[in-house]
Image (cartoon, rainbow, N blue to C red; front, side):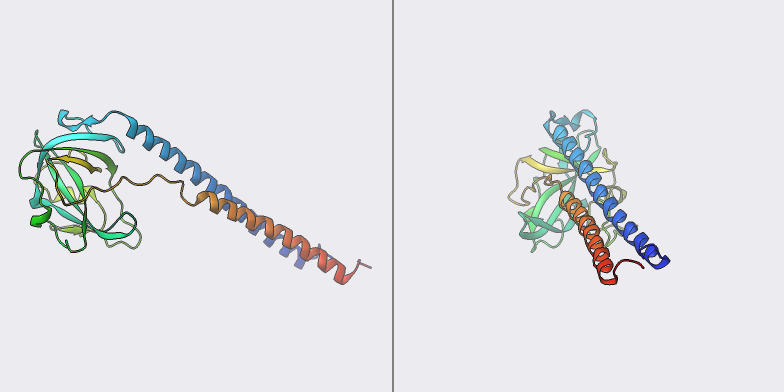
Length: 240
């Protein structure tokens, strides 16, 4: 009865679906391990001694750095749609810091409220002279699926993600870190605005819960199909 062509097709479909559930669960476990390894790498980098960018070295992602220079407000860019403390909507200001040797780095100086809608405003201006900063190196951001892209040409004053290479094209000097920028953590002399942004939170994401979910789908599907076969066998009776 259960080995007729129609039932064999049913069995194959169920086996394929259960196998896909199983693969999805193991893929989520793989993603979880990747995230855990990334978090360990970030914590190790953050625990190392700060890199002094004034000595001509390049800061690796997630390393703490110190640098001395002057902020070039004329080439400041507004980073749109940034949330502080998970509830305060606003923007960030990304400003080139020209180092003492003429090179520059992009610095996310921090968060400003929504009434700051463009760069280079007086109330958010950094000190005009030399500043000493400490910060955290972050990798350049990539375009998200539904995020507007940065125009490939011309000078942009506002962006939706920190595209370091694109912003660097409109600067009159070279960036020492062509695919990374610095999240400002401290500045001397200090500003009232922008407000310092916290580093990205290290979490494991939803991968563990998703893995459990896919394995539960597989278990429920297997038990349900077995119950269905048992019900059918009782309903139709033993074969003649």
